[in-house]
Length: 169
Length: 410
Image 1 (cartoon, each protein chain N blue to C red):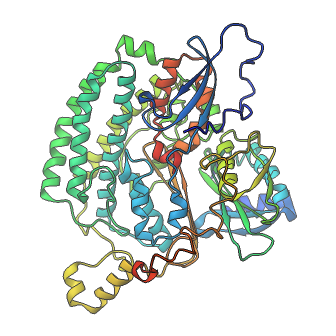
Image 2 (cartoon, rainbow over the protein chains, first blue to last red; image 1 turned 60 degrees about the horizontal axis):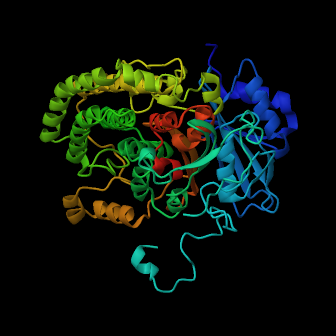
Image 3 (cartoon, each protein chain N blue to C red; image 1 turned 90 degrees about the vertical axis):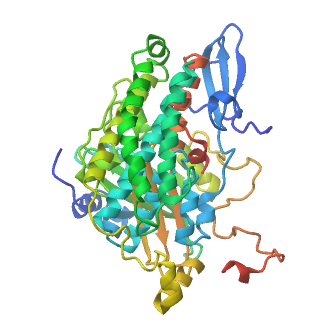
């Protein structure tokens, strides 16, 4: 096991390698969070995986967040990666516009990304370019909307038979 | 159910046998969704040549309950019951994982006693989870006896849960900030009783299967996966360790004072059903060790931390103390102030790394909560693991992966 990696060191390496593709660097709750421009995300994850020292080669999680207020960057695709050799975790983010949420698939790097990307497509409608089988996974095939987006409320907003005062809302 | 969602989908696996070029009869077999051998609601459409599986297409989502959407409408303390219903074989681990995530977000330190109590409950849950999985592997190979032995012991663990929180399966145990009450005298009696009697029963169960020639013939080589492939598929937990990778969240990123305890991580070599069985068996023994260490060194102190914003005050204070009344109302009505932030917290669940990715915008409920569900992630490797195997191996592989429908479908 090599020396313990620090957030500063890894973010410096990333900035040196990718320059302008690294948009912001933060450390919320000690976890290095880097925003990458969407066109470069595949390249960055591939570089992290093949880097001999960093060896970030475990995909922990892939998720999405919808921010309807931030125009032009409504959909955030969030990758949690883990270097098991160095015990170092990193979070990558890429923001996409809602009209055309397209990003390159990472199934060629991580076989496990297959269902994670399908789930993300299913709930948020993110189009993963190069995914072998991008169809819905948990929801019905005939569904014609992406239910986790913020515009779909949990309950039908037009319902009149319930008085919200009694439900603490 | 007529929607065979993925039957027409393009195959995900390039090294699959070319069906068109094969001679002989190819049959299509529906394994599930409600077949008794699948122990849950999963569908697998198998293409078989005699007994040999040529390909498999999965359909999941039969019990999808939109937990992540539900969580965006609920106050933090009301999300705990949702986590019960993920991996319902070890719901205390899910509950504790969620409590710890929120505690990380609000940045609170708990007394050592709470952490040790949590470790005891979580390791009991791990034993219960692994007992179900391993005894069911036995049932699927035709050995029902061991199953009846250990389910008696699982029952005792459920009685221990009852002593702590009053519930058995969907436990909703503990609160954000500690436990509802301290361990009762009856809990101490039952736990000591369990620690004394369980190893004997467990060893008997182990001797029924571990070196049983029929069991070994059935399980060795059934559904194998290599360590490299398992990592590519983001496997975690016992299934990854059976493939030879010693990744355990309890050791890698210790939480709840796991660094205080002495235990080993068992690893396998082949990643087949027998290795998964053996890894779980050894983990049960290690869990017992952890429980003994935690119980014998249980620190003095309070069973709860100082988190008035989340932890309900005692009822007599609510009636007699203005401050407690205010906190009570704020918690019950979900009006607690939560800091803005973004946390990822992982615990070692029964099946692997159970993660909570929580984004708070300061509102009454999470802005976004994503569960990293280990089952969902590793179940996608199932077709690759059973291609070329017999149908009976497919059933064994499924039960030894311990795919829990609740966790799979969220």
